Length: 391
Image (cartoon, rainbow, N blue to C red; front, side, top):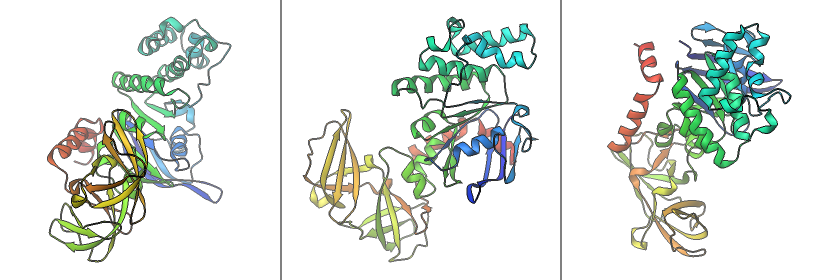
């Protein structure tokens, strides 16, 4: 077992508190991404797990063993950094084996591990080359190979693809996912790129100002964001937000008005929500769930400011008549043009609601979406482990 358990982790630099009581339970064999904007604490959290930071409080356990005060070299982890950090005067074979040789490992075992890592990463033909003779993607493979060769219990990856061009990042994402599947080892991956997190991870930790905003599967974050921060951070283009007022309440929904709405809209909720009439709420809607419609069917009216035509879809940026901006995504090359007046309909079944504190109000999902979320949770490496842990 090489799961990670983090309890009440705190870290400050002088008077600036970076980690404000982090609690996480990561299962053995799970691929987890730490995701968030610059300054949220994700790299500091990773460095704390690696033993590169002196903590101000909390505990870290790896495979049930308390490693909080252990030096980095004794934690049985391997780390891949943003920079490749290869020795320029050594060939690939020496770059891979140097650390093992320093630790006194026997030559036969070193050769076995080098061959195994090279085969896994498909760099066997590169073993006699120097780093300057390698492309960026090949250098990153060597850096990852240097971690693999140690056969650790835990891999820590700190934005390892950020120095690569867009096309190569896609290729390396696929290779990292395949590598995790082959090795079956626990991996923690830091990124500010939500595409990397959503495509690679079993679960994603969304961090905001040193706290965990939400920890869940990619589809959970997308369809059931816990708060305004997660809703706005996950998804591209980002979710649209409107301020509205509760006009009426029902057993399974609320009717909203005001806030630039041309007519009232009823949003289904999972159960009766005690918000109260005339209370303000934030209504969220994904750009692809807005429809351009005729005036009589519209909830919103605005003027087009910019149209980004991307071929398969168009991003329409709109200034609302009641104030505020939003973005609509429409299929194909839509004929709408700048400065054109448009009418928009909200798909009420796809609306998100947030209370005055920014917390999400639970909503009822359609069966197909709920089935996708349940399937994603069930197939994750964490599912069985957590079920056994809490039995």
